[in-house]
Image (tube, rainbow, N blue to C red; front, side):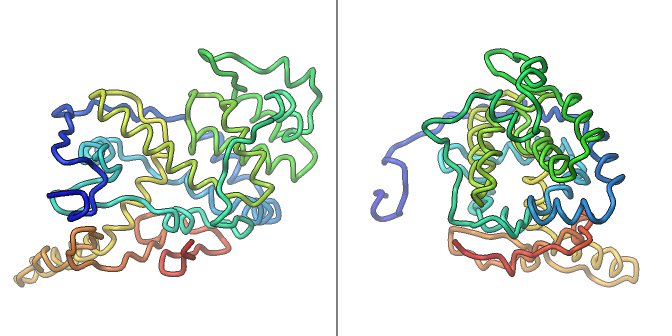
Length: 308
């Protein structure tokens, strides 16, 4: 088959060599202190966070199933950058991720790109935190060839800072550094601050989150091992959102079996999306469908997401 006939992005005769099994590490930051800070805030400061940064705090409640993630990673196809289950392809979209981390201030069509002339890391942290150059410089650490700031310093600032908006800003930076881009465990990487300072311009962080997921999964699959450096919580939330119907049908099947009735056939009760012409079922992503806590102001579902 030619590229023109199959609309394929690969040349004829291309062969992808992958390891039989990818040993992938899903080591995560300890999020307990972030959870305690969030749970200790009153409604006023939480609403300020929701307004400025969307539904990011729900990621703190997502339970990371490492076995499920490792199994899912085996189906990642680096050639097409998607999950391939025989003739069915699945891949997160910008619209789906936007719906999961709904933020009213963000515009879908304003993507993050690294500016040509960015201020030094120290200056960026000074602007975000409102602290002096001496204070920031004394707390920056080196992790390999990267500059970082330890989470413990951000935690102390969140707990002690009198300015409510600055506390919200530093808390959001901590979520991005600890969950969305966990490059250096226990620290927030310099690269995260590059993205963070542009959020005020209403750019979306979703493309950067997706790009990091693609990059990390591709690297691990090609090497046969490695640590996944991406937002595991968001990826698993997305994955569960495509199987909410299977879970519900499974519960119905158990009840029918208990009553001596025949269960449904899974052929007609799966919620796959496909690029190969199969029948598809719409995916309505509601956080309550897969055990996630709903923020006080409510969450958008995928049926209401905006197409770029």
